[in-house]
Image 1 (cartoon, rainbow, N blue to C red):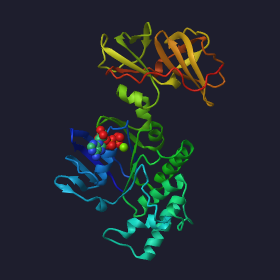
Image 2 (cartoon, rainbow, N blue to C red):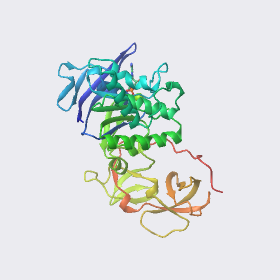
Image 3 (cartoon, protein in one colour):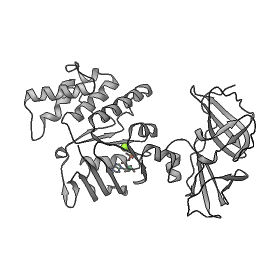
Length: 374
Ligand SMILES: Nc1ncnc2c1ncn2[C@@H]1O[C@H](COP(=O)(O)OP(=O)(O)O)[C@@H](O)[C@H]1O
Ligand SMILES: [Mg+2]
Protein backbone atom coordinates (compact mmCIF):
# COMPACT_ATOMS: atom_id res chain seq x y z
CA UNK A 1 0.00 0.00 0.00
CA UNK A 2 1.04 3.57 0.18
CA UNK A 3 1.46 6.76 2.11
CA UNK A 4 -0.28 9.88 0.80
CA UNK A 5 1.18 13.33 1.40
CA UNK A 6 -0.72 16.49 0.55
CA UNK A 7 1.19 19.73 1.12
CA UNK A 8 -0.03 23.34 0.86
CA UNK A 9 -2.75 22.39 -1.63
CA UNK A 10 -4.55 25.32 -3.24
CA UNK A 11 -7.41 25.33 -5.72
CA UNK A 12 -9.42 28.31 -6.96
CA UNK A 13 -12.36 27.94 -9.35
CA UNK A 14 -12.86 30.65 -11.91
CA UNK A 15 -16.49 31.73 -12.25
CA UNK A 16 -18.42 34.60 -13.84
CA UNK A 17 -18.47 36.30 -10.48
CA UNK A 18 -14.76 35.91 -9.84
CA UNK A 19 -12.55 33.31 -8.19
CA UNK A 20 -13.86 30.86 -5.58
CA UNK A 21 -11.02 29.92 -3.27
CA UNK A 22 -12.20 26.38 -2.55
CA UNK A 23 -9.02 24.99 -0.98
CA UNK A 24 -6.52 27.32 0.64
CA UNK A 25 -3.35 25.66 1.82
CA UNK A 26 -4.40 22.20 2.91
CA UNK A 27 -1.71 19.84 4.24
CA UNK A 28 -2.05 16.35 5.65
CA UNK A 29 -0.46 12.92 5.59
CA UNK A 30 -2.24 9.60 5.45
CA UNK A 31 -0.03 6.82 6.74
CA UNK A 32 0.14 3.51 4.96
CA UNK A 33 -3.07 1.49 5.42
CA UNK A 34 -4.92 4.13 7.40
CA UNK A 35 -8.46 5.44 7.11
CA UNK A 36 -8.35 9.23 6.97
CA UNK A 37 -11.45 11.44 6.92
CA UNK A 38 -11.98 15.01 5.78
CA UNK A 39 -14.95 16.20 7.86
CA UNK A 40 -16.73 19.51 7.49
CA UNK A 41 -19.89 21.33 6.46
CA UNK A 42 -21.06 21.66 2.88
CA UNK A 43 -18.86 23.94 0.81
CA UNK A 44 -15.73 23.72 2.98
CA UNK A 45 -13.61 22.18 0.21
CA UNK A 46 -13.72 18.43 0.90
CA UNK A 47 -14.73 17.28 -2.58
CA UNK A 48 -12.30 19.68 -4.22
CA UNK A 49 -9.45 18.28 -2.14
CA UNK A 50 -10.42 14.73 -3.07
CA UNK A 51 -10.77 15.61 -6.76
CA UNK A 52 -7.30 17.15 -6.72
CA UNK A 53 -5.91 13.91 -5.26
CA UNK A 54 -7.72 11.97 -7.97
CA UNK A 55 -6.36 14.26 -10.69
CA UNK A 56 -9.84 15.42 -11.71
CA UNK A 57 -8.91 19.00 -10.80
CA UNK A 58 -5.66 20.81 -11.40
CA UNK A 59 -4.54 22.59 -8.24
CA UNK A 60 -2.69 25.87 -8.71
CA UNK A 61 -0.43 25.28 -5.76
CA UNK A 62 1.01 22.60 -3.51
CA UNK A 63 2.09 19.03 -4.02
CA UNK A 64 0.39 15.64 -3.83
CA UNK A 65 2.60 12.63 -3.37
CA UNK A 66 1.95 8.89 -3.16
CA UNK A 67 4.97 7.34 -1.45
CA UNK A 68 7.80 9.07 -3.29
CA UNK A 69 5.94 9.61 -6.56
CA UNK A 70 4.81 13.18 -7.15
CA UNK A 71 1.28 13.04 -8.60
CA UNK A 72 0.84 16.78 -8.78
CA UNK A 73 3.09 19.77 -8.16
CA UNK A 74 6.70 20.71 -8.94
CA UNK A 75 5.68 21.03 -12.60
CA UNK A 76 4.27 17.50 -12.75
CA UNK A 77 0.69 16.38 -13.28
CA UNK A 78 -0.07 12.66 -13.53
CA UNK A 79 -3.40 12.08 -15.32
CA UNK A 80 -6.14 10.36 -13.29
CA UNK A 81 -5.93 6.99 -15.06
CA UNK A 82 -2.23 6.69 -14.19
CA UNK A 83 -2.69 7.42 -10.48
CA UNK A 84 -3.37 3.90 -9.25
CA UNK A 85 -6.43 4.75 -7.21
CA UNK A 86 -10.05 3.73 -6.87
CA UNK A 87 -12.83 6.20 -6.24
CA UNK A 88 -16.48 6.09 -5.16
CA UNK A 89 -18.65 9.18 -5.46
CA UNK A 90 -21.78 10.21 -3.62
CA UNK A 91 -23.88 9.17 -6.60
CA UNK A 92 -22.28 5.81 -7.23
CA UNK A 93 -22.27 6.39 -11.00
CA UNK A 94 -22.75 2.74 -11.86
CA UNK A 95 -23.66 2.19 -15.48
CA UNK A 96 -27.37 1.31 -15.72
CA UNK A 97 -27.09 -0.29 -19.17
CA UNK A 98 -24.54 -2.83 -17.91
CA UNK A 99 -24.86 -5.86 -15.71
CA UNK A 100 -22.93 -6.29 -12.47
CA UNK A 101 -20.02 -8.12 -14.10
CA UNK A 102 -19.44 -5.50 -16.81
CA UNK A 103 -19.68 -2.65 -14.34
CA UNK A 104 -16.89 -4.10 -12.23
CA UNK A 105 -14.85 -5.21 -15.26
CA UNK A 106 -14.95 -1.76 -16.84
CA UNK A 107 -11.77 -0.35 -15.24
CA UNK A 108 -9.86 -3.46 -16.39
CA UNK A 109 -10.96 -3.01 -20.00
CA UNK A 110 -9.92 0.61 -20.44
CA UNK A 111 -6.53 2.27 -20.19
CA UNK A 112 -3.13 1.01 -21.14
CA UNK A 113 -2.47 -2.35 -19.55
CA UNK A 114 -5.53 -4.35 -20.60
CA UNK A 115 -6.13 -7.65 -18.90
CA UNK A 116 -6.92 -10.93 -20.68
CA UNK A 117 -10.52 -12.08 -20.39
CA UNK A 118 -9.57 -14.93 -18.04
CA UNK A 119 -7.80 -12.45 -15.83
CA UNK A 120 -10.73 -10.05 -15.97
CA UNK A 121 -13.08 -12.82 -14.81
CA UNK A 122 -10.80 -13.76 -11.94
CA UNK A 123 -10.33 -10.17 -10.78
CA UNK A 124 -14.04 -9.34 -11.04
CA UNK A 125 -14.97 -12.41 -9.04
CA UNK A 126 -12.43 -11.53 -6.37
CA UNK A 127 -13.75 -7.97 -6.15
CA UNK A 128 -17.38 -9.12 -5.96
CA UNK A 129 -16.50 -11.60 -3.22
CA UNK A 130 -14.85 -8.82 -1.22
CA UNK A 131 -18.12 -6.90 -1.06
CA UNK A 132 -20.43 -9.91 -0.81
CA UNK A 133 -21.97 -9.71 -4.29
CA UNK A 134 -20.78 -13.05 -5.62
CA UNK A 135 -23.34 -14.85 -7.75
CA UNK A 136 -24.94 -11.61 -9.01
CA UNK A 137 -22.66 -11.19 -12.05
CA UNK A 138 -25.47 -11.31 -14.63
CA UNK A 139 -27.95 -9.10 -12.77
CA UNK A 140 -28.66 -5.77 -14.52
CA UNK A 141 -27.18 -3.08 -12.27
CA UNK A 142 -30.42 -1.08 -11.82
CA UNK A 143 -32.09 -4.18 -10.33
CA UNK A 144 -29.78 -4.07 -7.31
CA UNK A 145 -30.93 -2.59 -4.00
CA UNK A 146 -29.38 0.66 -2.77
CA UNK A 147 -26.92 -1.18 -0.54
CA UNK A 148 -25.95 -3.57 -3.32
CA UNK A 149 -25.36 -0.70 -5.74
CA UNK A 150 -23.14 0.90 -3.17
CA UNK A 151 -21.17 -2.35 -2.82
CA UNK A 152 -20.95 -2.61 -6.59
CA UNK A 153 -19.39 0.85 -6.78
CA UNK A 154 -16.91 -0.23 -4.13
CA UNK A 155 -16.06 -3.45 -6.02
CA UNK A 156 -15.42 -1.41 -9.14
CA UNK A 157 -13.15 0.95 -7.23
CA UNK A 158 -11.17 -1.98 -5.81
CA UNK A 159 -10.94 -4.23 -8.87
CA UNK A 160 -7.61 -2.87 -10.06
CA UNK A 161 -6.16 -3.32 -6.56
CA UNK A 162 -5.32 0.34 -6.27
CA UNK A 163 -2.85 1.68 -3.74
CA UNK A 164 -5.26 4.39 -2.65
CA UNK A 165 -9.05 4.48 -2.16
CA UNK A 166 -10.97 7.78 -2.34
CA UNK A 167 -14.56 7.90 -1.06
CA UNK A 168 -16.77 10.98 -1.36
CA UNK A 169 -19.85 10.72 0.89
CA UNK A 170 -20.54 7.20 -0.43
CA UNK A 171 -23.22 6.44 2.17
CA UNK A 172 -25.26 9.63 2.05
CA UNK A 173 -27.83 8.34 -0.45
CA UNK A 174 -28.78 5.38 1.74
CA UNK A 175 -31.54 5.35 4.33
CA UNK A 176 -30.52 5.51 7.98
CA UNK A 177 -30.62 1.78 8.80
CA UNK A 178 -28.72 0.77 5.69
CA UNK A 179 -26.23 3.57 6.16
CA UNK A 180 -25.39 2.23 9.57
CA UNK A 181 -24.93 -1.31 8.28
CA UNK A 182 -22.83 -0.19 5.34
CA UNK A 183 -20.54 1.80 7.52
CA UNK A 184 -19.81 -1.29 9.58
CA UNK A 185 -19.08 -3.22 6.39
CA UNK A 186 -16.91 -0.47 5.01
CA UNK A 187 -14.87 -0.21 8.17
CA UNK A 188 -14.38 -3.95 8.29
CA UNK A 189 -13.38 -4.12 4.62
CA UNK A 190 -10.88 -1.28 4.91
CA UNK A 191 -9.28 -2.81 8.00
CA UNK A 192 -9.11 -6.23 6.30
CA UNK A 193 -7.58 -4.95 3.05
CA UNK A 194 -5.41 -2.37 4.78
CA UNK A 195 -5.90 -0.03 1.86
CA UNK A 196 -4.90 3.59 2.39
CA UNK A 197 -8.21 5.47 2.31
CA UNK A 198 -9.33 9.09 2.16
CA UNK A 199 -12.99 9.53 3.07
CA UNK A 200 -15.06 12.69 2.76
CA UNK A 201 -18.18 13.36 4.83
CA UNK A 202 -20.20 16.05 6.58
CA UNK A 203 -21.47 13.42 9.05
CA UNK A 204 -19.48 13.50 12.27
CA UNK A 205 -20.83 10.14 13.46
CA UNK A 206 -19.53 8.49 10.31
CA UNK A 207 -16.17 10.18 10.66
CA UNK A 208 -15.71 9.11 14.28
CA UNK A 209 -16.83 5.58 13.59
CA UNK A 210 -14.77 4.88 10.49
CA UNK A 211 -11.52 6.75 10.87
CA UNK A 212 -8.06 6.30 12.27
CA UNK A 213 -7.63 10.04 11.90
CA UNK A 214 -9.97 12.94 11.18
CA UNK A 215 -9.28 16.39 9.74
CA UNK A 216 -11.96 18.96 10.52
CA UNK A 217 -12.29 21.40 7.63
CA UNK A 218 -13.75 24.91 7.58
CA UNK A 219 -13.65 27.48 4.76
CA UNK A 220 -11.09 25.70 2.63
CA UNK A 221 -8.67 24.83 5.41
CA UNK A 222 -8.03 22.17 8.05
CA UNK A 223 -8.75 23.58 11.52
CA UNK A 224 -7.92 20.46 13.55
CA UNK A 225 -6.49 17.03 12.96
CA UNK A 226 -6.30 14.03 15.23
CA UNK A 227 -7.74 10.69 16.26
CA UNK A 228 -11.54 10.60 16.68
CA UNK A 229 -11.05 10.63 20.45
CA UNK A 230 -8.78 13.68 20.35
CA UNK A 231 -11.10 15.58 18.05
CA UNK A 232 -14.12 14.89 20.22
CA UNK A 233 -12.55 15.26 23.65
CA UNK A 234 -10.16 18.08 23.02
CA UNK A 235 -11.48 20.38 20.30
CA UNK A 236 -9.03 23.17 19.54
CA UNK A 237 -11.56 25.74 18.31
CA UNK A 238 -15.17 26.66 18.97
CA UNK A 239 -16.05 25.62 15.43
CA UNK A 240 -14.56 22.13 15.87
CA UNK A 241 -16.33 21.70 19.22
CA UNK A 242 -19.64 22.69 17.69
CA UNK A 243 -19.32 20.68 14.50
CA UNK A 244 -18.26 17.41 16.12
CA UNK A 245 -20.76 16.19 18.68
CA UNK A 246 -23.15 18.17 20.83
CA UNK A 247 -21.87 20.81 23.16
CA UNK A 248 -22.92 23.55 25.52
CA UNK A 249 -20.75 26.64 25.29
CA UNK A 250 -20.03 28.64 28.42
CA UNK A 251 -18.18 31.83 27.64
CA UNK A 252 -16.87 34.27 30.20
CA UNK A 253 -13.99 36.20 31.66
CA UNK A 254 -11.17 34.11 33.02
CA UNK A 255 -11.01 34.35 36.81
CA UNK A 256 -8.99 32.55 39.43
CA UNK A 257 -9.41 28.77 38.82
CA UNK A 258 -12.18 29.13 36.30
CA UNK A 259 -14.40 31.36 34.23
CA UNK A 260 -17.19 33.71 35.25
CA UNK A 261 -20.40 32.19 33.91
CA UNK A 262 -23.92 31.17 34.94
CA UNK A 263 -24.03 33.98 37.49
CA UNK A 264 -21.06 32.60 39.38
CA UNK A 265 -17.80 30.84 38.76
CA UNK A 266 -17.34 27.60 36.86
CA UNK A 267 -14.16 25.90 37.97
CA UNK A 268 -12.02 24.54 35.18
CA UNK A 269 -8.45 24.00 34.14
CA UNK A 270 -6.95 26.43 31.72
CA UNK A 271 -4.27 26.49 29.05
CA UNK A 272 -1.13 28.21 30.35
CA UNK A 273 -1.41 31.17 28.03
CA UNK A 274 -4.92 32.05 29.13
CA UNK A 275 -4.80 34.67 31.89
CA UNK A 276 -7.36 36.21 34.26
CA UNK A 277 -9.26 39.00 32.52
CA UNK A 278 -9.05 37.33 29.11
CA UNK A 279 -12.02 35.65 27.39
CA UNK A 280 -12.39 31.94 28.05
CA UNK A 281 -14.69 29.32 26.59
CA UNK A 282 -15.73 26.10 28.25
CA UNK A 283 -17.18 23.38 26.04
CA UNK A 284 -19.32 20.81 27.86
CA UNK A 285 -20.31 17.51 26.30
CA UNK A 286 -23.79 16.27 27.37
CA UNK A 287 -22.46 12.98 28.74
CA UNK A 288 -20.20 14.94 31.08
CA UNK A 289 -23.04 16.93 32.63
CA UNK A 290 -24.76 15.27 35.59
CA UNK A 291 -28.44 16.05 36.21
CA UNK A 292 -30.11 15.45 39.57
CA UNK A 293 -33.47 16.13 41.14
CA UNK A 294 -31.85 17.36 44.36
CA UNK A 295 -28.70 19.35 45.13
CA UNK A 296 -25.61 17.67 46.51
CA UNK A 297 -23.66 20.87 47.11
CA UNK A 298 -20.77 19.83 44.97
CA UNK A 299 -18.32 22.08 43.10
CA UNK A 300 -19.68 23.34 39.76
CA UNK A 301 -23.25 22.57 40.74
CA UNK A 302 -25.96 24.93 39.46
CA UNK A 303 -29.71 24.95 39.90
CA UNK A 304 -32.04 25.18 36.92
CA UNK A 305 -35.27 24.09 35.33
CA UNK A 306 -35.67 21.00 33.20
CA UNK A 307 -36.95 22.24 29.85
CA UNK A 308 -36.83 18.99 27.93
CA UNK A 309 -36.31 15.35 28.79
CA UNK A 310 -36.62 13.40 25.55
CA UNK A 311 -36.59 9.63 25.77
CA UNK A 312 -34.26 8.13 23.16
CA UNK A 313 -34.26 4.53 24.35
CA UNK A 314 -30.69 4.23 25.57
CA UNK A 315 -30.64 7.64 27.24
CA UNK A 316 -32.62 10.75 28.11
CA UNK A 317 -31.66 13.84 26.18
CA UNK A 318 -32.11 16.74 28.58
CA UNK A 319 -32.04 20.48 28.24
CA UNK A 320 -31.75 22.42 31.47
CA UNK A 321 -32.22 26.18 31.62
CA UNK A 322 -29.71 27.67 34.07
CA UNK A 323 -30.74 31.32 34.00
CA UNK A 324 -30.65 32.23 30.30
CA UNK A 325 -28.27 29.44 29.38
CA UNK A 326 -29.52 26.17 27.96
CA UNK A 327 -27.35 23.29 29.10
CA UNK A 328 -27.51 20.00 27.30
CA UNK A 329 -27.17 16.84 29.37
CA UNK A 330 -27.59 13.14 29.03
CA UNK A 331 -29.19 11.01 31.74
CA UNK A 332 -29.74 7.30 32.21
CA UNK A 333 -33.17 6.30 30.82
CA UNK A 334 -34.29 4.97 34.20
CA UNK A 335 -33.86 8.37 35.88
CA UNK A 336 -37.22 9.86 36.83
CA UNK A 337 -37.23 13.45 35.67
CA UNK A 338 -40.19 15.56 34.67
CA UNK A 339 -40.22 18.47 32.35
CA UNK A 340 -40.62 21.74 34.22
CA UNK A 341 -39.20 20.47 37.51
CA UNK A 342 -36.29 22.04 39.38
CA UNK A 343 -33.04 20.18 38.77
CA UNK A 344 -29.36 20.62 39.55
CA UNK A 345 -26.62 20.18 37.01
CA UNK A 346 -23.03 19.40 37.88
CA UNK A 347 -20.00 19.83 35.66
CA UNK A 348 -17.41 17.53 37.21
CA UNK A 349 -14.22 19.55 37.37
CA UNK A 350 -12.12 16.83 35.72
CA UNK A 351 -14.14 17.28 32.52
CA UNK A 352 -13.81 21.04 32.46
CA UNK A 353 -10.98 22.42 30.35
CA UNK A 354 -11.39 25.93 29.02
CA UNK A 355 -9.92 27.29 25.81
CA UNK A 356 -9.42 30.76 24.49
CA UNK A 357 -12.74 32.15 23.24
CA UNK A 358 -12.46 32.55 19.47
CA UNK A 359 -15.97 34.01 19.20
CA UNK A 360 -17.58 31.01 17.52
CA UNK A 361 -21.08 30.25 18.82
CA UNK A 362 -23.12 27.12 18.16
CA UNK A 363 -26.32 27.05 16.22
CA UNK A 364 -29.21 27.95 18.52
CA UNK A 365 -30.43 25.03 20.60
CA UNK A 366 -33.83 23.83 19.55
CA UNK A 367 -36.25 23.81 22.43
CA UNK A 368 -38.48 21.27 20.75
CA UNK A 369 -36.98 18.03 19.62
CA UNK A 370 -38.05 14.43 20.12
CA UNK A 371 -40.91 13.26 22.29
CA UNK A 372 -41.20 14.64 25.77
CA UNK A 373 -41.42 12.37 28.75
CA UNK A 374 -44.58 13.27 30.62
N1 LIG B 1 -16.78 23.49 -10.43
C1 LIG B 1 -16.89 24.50 -9.58
N2 LIG B 1 -16.94 25.78 -10.01
C2 LIG B 1 -17.03 26.81 -9.15
N3 LIG B 1 -17.08 26.69 -7.82
C3 LIG B 1 -17.04 25.44 -7.32
C4 LIG B 1 -16.95 24.28 -8.17
N4 LIG B 1 -16.93 23.17 -7.38
C5 LIG B 1 -17.00 23.62 -6.12
N5 LIG B 1 -17.07 24.97 -6.06
C6 LIG B 1 -17.12 25.81 -4.85
O1 LIG B 1 -15.96 25.54 -4.09
C7 LIG B 1 -16.25 25.49 -2.70
C8 LIG B 1 -15.88 24.12 -2.15
O2 LIG B 1 -16.72 23.15 -2.76
P1 LIG B 1 -16.59 21.59 -2.47
O3 LIG B 1 -15.16 21.20 -2.55
O4 LIG B 1 -17.54 20.89 -3.38
O5 LIG B 1 -17.08 21.51 -0.96
P2 LIG B 1 -17.65 20.27 -0.10
O6 LIG B 1 -17.35 19.01 -0.83
O7 LIG B 1 -16.93 20.40 1.21
O8 LIG B 1 -19.10 20.52 0.06
C9 LIG B 1 -17.72 25.82 -2.57
O9 LIG B 1 -17.83 27.20 -2.33
C10 LIG B 1 -18.27 25.47 -3.93
O10 LIG B 1 -19.42 26.24 -4.22
MG1 LIG C 1 -18.71 17.50 -1.48
